[in-house]
Image (cartoon, rainbow over all chains, first blue to last red):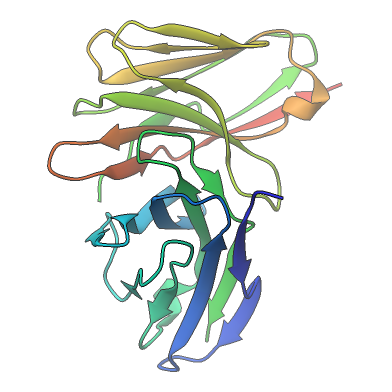
Length: 112
Length: 112
């Protein structure tokens, strides 16, 4: 089944404790992206990757890192999480930037 | 970061009624998209628009790409209970970057 998977789905952590949210797609897509969703603000793009060689900042990259060492995986790294990073996070992928994005099921993060 | 202005923020309608929502921006986009998000799920693409003035339908949904390239409209005809959810517009920026900018969402509730 073609899909985007994220792990974990739910995470509670404390300020400053490094964490990684994994994202994997099995559709051989080039473009991958991370978003955060907050009430009243919709989705905001954190980072995107055009392909394995190109990664760039979205609109709200501060406090996040990503890596794209292989086409299928695009982990989101929070080196030192803070409470303002409490949010619902979505990973998405598409064949190219212009084509339909498929979203993962979301990861709900609470930083205490 | 920039976000698109989406209105209305929420609406209650009776089953069978038509619904309209719109999205505006202070800058130009070359691609407009409309997504629907059901509770607990990631957004799913409804309609993609690639040319100014384009009018595209998908079943009971019709969307238009504004002539100025700064706005877009989504209409839902003869609404049914399963239309409940949050609808997001999104624009793709492709000048020197490949970012998606999302609207703040329209929450639709359908009264049977």
